[in-house]
Image (tube, rainbow, N blue to C red; front, side, top):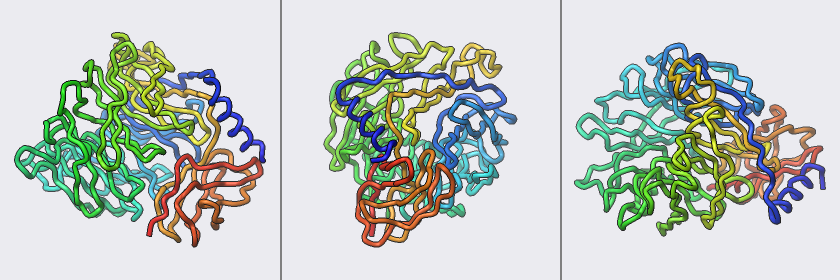
Length: 465
């Protein structure tokens, strides 16, 4: 067993008996020049992080840039409003470029779909219009489908059906197709106003939420096929204390269930975490009561199997916190922000080095002219003692499909295997490998063996037909 593999096993064993000491580090504060109110971040193929800020920058319409793991910022791309305003998250495409949406701006002022190359060239692929049938106000992070296309949602529909929302597919070249429009039936039993894009489930269908509509008016959890057949899995708001209006994207856990949050509502009206099975069985896992936080935002599942997330405030303080939660709903507060290290943490990711990284919408250097009393936001890391792993982009594909494997410090790669079946590969850098799904591969974990040991993927790769 290699040194790195032994480290991962050892750390997992330690976690089974005792909690690792958490190390929180505030890495950098943002400014009017870098962009303010960061909303999204992710890992780049070169091992650094990408970040999007929804406001400020050179034209006051937001920015996209990169950050090293110690907080050095560079590569700024300023949105000019005419090519988008309020950038959302970025999705790595199979071609190695990044794709995203802006909520506002563009030639029709209804938002855009854009492409950002690894070298930083920004181009608009599609312009939404306020009076178009394709909707306006695209939200969240696009989902990469097994077909190489991107799937997303708009908050609004057309001028005659405003604020209902749509689901769309867009090709890497910019051909956009609306494959579902919400609330075409009186009462909106299928939901309305999605605040986030759907995610791709392991069964090849897409799953998401709406803030309104449904049988009780409190929003829905839905499943939709790539062809546009929608099934409402659960309608929220059916009983006292039932969470309502989910706005963050769902995640699919390693147990196959979907997990999400509501920012308010719940038993104490401070928000809740819920679980829903692929067949629609709904369970409230945790109701926040202010002492453990309020206004939970987005969840992620780390390689230890626990859920991690953030809250907008805790104990009546509007600074926010980071929490850890078991799949049974047991919660532990890991860090409470004080303003100098950030305010209103938005999201977390786990880098393939095992460390958690996140951004806050405010706080940090309060000399920020955008809002001196609030700040422009920060980037931070939280090391909870987890070891490195590998991640696949995409994590679905048929035999022969191209796959990018992200990792950390690849050295002397010896083999890449899909559930035990070796694949051909090309090492593109110390943090990225290009491979194809081998003949005979079946759904399961991906492993990379190099001179440091063996790394396993955080989730299973789904082999499709």
